[in-house]
Structure formats: structure tokens, C-alpha cells
Image (cartoon, rainbow over all chains, first blue to last red):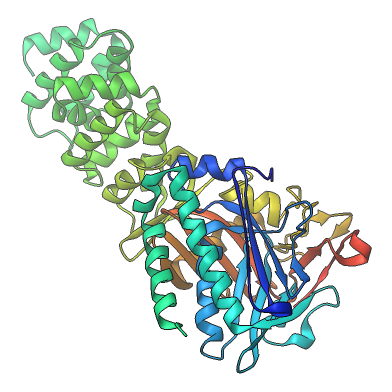
Length: 183
Length: 301
């Protein structure tokens, strides 16, 4: 994917427990938004505690998923970790998965899983699947800011996109997660 | 029929005259007035529309006459100017005769043809789907003309391999392209010829295909994969967020040797975008990061 259109890179967290989520939305994606379709393919890169979990920040590439689908999964993951459950981002071009698994009261292990069984069993992941621990707060702040900025950016491309029912649902979900996980 | 009708029928050529006279004996026709009206309306059509209407009467006898009698002059002109296919017109008239297609559907069809939201190929697929819904697993047997016309107004029916109804929702499986629809599913998750050089892994339906020089297990034909997609929509676990719907499906009934335990289908705005296998003993996956970044195609659960 050509890295044009817009690229969102957020960094949240405390010291070495930070989380970066980058959305690489190319020109093709921008054109789809202009046509009224906000949920086509984008790439996503994630860096946790300075470990690249997926993607390559230097060339601005990542795992490929549906733009809105990834945002919903990210918000679901925040809700999950705040309920001491595992959260999963599913990248539907593959599939590949990113797992958010709470390890203590305020720590979350962020891991790539190439295998389906690795979603619930870390031993079943491959040696190439990286992971790193970040704070729960960093996950919340980073995800909420990423989704917020995503909505703002697509509405700059086409303000009418806010009337799309998937985007309306995303805004509602963002508000709910912000309220339900407020610290 | 009256003398004027008989004269017009004779002037219309031997085949047309034969069709008109056969229509008089058809159970589709209730009165000679229908035949008189239809023949006069056809006479008022110009050029290709006139020719196509006469061929329809010849091809179908009574049902063709009944269809022509039903439509007003404007709708008749729209239909016969827009639709070239004899098969489509004949099927449509038979469906109107047997009640599968009603008068209000004909009105909607001519409106859609007039507005450009439907073309001749779409109408052909519309009538074909109505005929095939009891025999083609990709076409839901509960689909009716109302459902197909609602679909035609927002997507390309001629591009649709299948139409599946779940509750009040109607989903199409489009031929699509490498980015979405059946061609995406085939090129990425069967043939493996689309963007395997990216960072993403790729899972494969077991179709006995060869990918990256490796022969994958045999379990499903391409047609069976399409049916699995349709069944996933019909019976899978459904999550709806806005116009986006995800279906997770564990194929069991009818797929005992498929080797696929779990799969997913994504639908957006009523159209299938992608479908892929998630796990199963015959599901192989291309993982580009393995083998020092050269990739490996192997089985992973």
C-alpha cells in the first residue's frame, strides 16, 4: 500500500511501558472514504515497550485489516483488559492476530499470534511472534486517542462519512469505552 | 380476436402470427381483449423493441402476450428497448404468468431500467436467480422478487454469484475483484496469487491446489467453498456493527471431510468482502516471517 492519505502514529504510556499504534491509510483507502466506504483495507503497525509487535515503522507498513474492524477490535480489547479478559485484534487479510492479555493488575502483555491456538495459549505461538508488556493505562490512552484521531481524519476526507452507520456506531462505542473504563 | 388484430398479426410475419394464434389457446390468456391490446401495443413499438416483442410472443405464446398486455406503453417501450435477451424476456413473462413476478414488480423493474440502476444483464440474473433458487445452494430458497429488486437497487445483480437471506438481511456474494468478493477469496485464500509478498500471513482453503510449489490437502472444490461462505452467512455466529457484519462458522453438516474447523466471513453493506479459514487439520498457512523472512507454507493450528 502506498503510504499517503494519512498516517496516524500515537504514543501513550509511562517511560518504558509505552504503546504506539500506527494506522497507515493509503491513497486507495482515502478514495474509498470519498466514495462513502470507511471500512476498506488499511495497514496497522504496533510497537509495545520499544518492541515492534507488528509492522515496520521505518517503511510505514503493517498488518492489513479492515479500517473500522480494527478500531472496533481495539476498543473491545480495552474493555476486555479492564475486565481482566484477553482482547484480540483480528487482521482479516491473513488472518493474523494481536493479543492483549492482562498479566497483573496494571500490566498487559501485547503479543502477535500467527496461530489460532496462540490466542489463548501463549505456548502455542511461534518463536517469531514478538511480545512486550505495557501498562493497562497505556493501552487505554493509546487506543482511545487512535480511534478518536481515525474518526477525525476520515471526517476531514469527507464530513458526510460521519453519517455512515458503521462510523456512527464506532463513535458510540468510543464514547462507551471511554466512560466505562474511566480511571 | 378481432379482424384488425388478425391483420396486424399477419403483417407481423409468420412467426409472430403463429405465436398470436397459439396464445389464443393458451391458459395464460383470459380473453381475446388481452390479445387485441397486446398486438396493438406491439404494433406501436419501433425498431428493435418491436422485433423483440414479436419474438417474445413467438417464444412464449400466452405468457408473452399476457406480459405485453399488462405493461403500459411507456413501460413496454422501456422494457423492450433495454432488454435484448430473448431468454430473459421469455423467463420474465413465464414468471409473471405463474405469479412469481407480480404487476408491482414489473413497475419496479421498468423504473430501475429507466433510471439505469438495473440493466439487461441485471434483469437476466434476476430472472435466472428466481428460477434457480430451489436448486442452487448459493441462492437462498426464501428469496423472492422483492428481495432481488431491493438488492438490484443498490448493487450489481449481474455480478452476483449468490444471494443469501438471514432474517430480514439480504447478502450478495459478488464476483468482485482482487480486493473484495469471490475473486479476492479465490486469489488470496485458494490460488495464493495476490499479495503473498506482504508482511501478512495467508490461510488457505484446502482445495488440492499448489501454492509456493507445495501441494495443499484436498478437501473442498471452489464451488464447495462458495457454499461454505453461503452457509456461514446463513448459520454462523453473527456480530453486527453498523453496516459491517462478521460471521464465524464451524462447518460440520455437509462438510465432514473439509478439514476446516473454523472460518470467518466479512460482509459490509450487504456484500461479502472476504472469507477465510481460521483453523482445521487441512488448513495451511503461508507465514512470510518464517525461514529468515523467506516464508514457509505449513500447517498451524
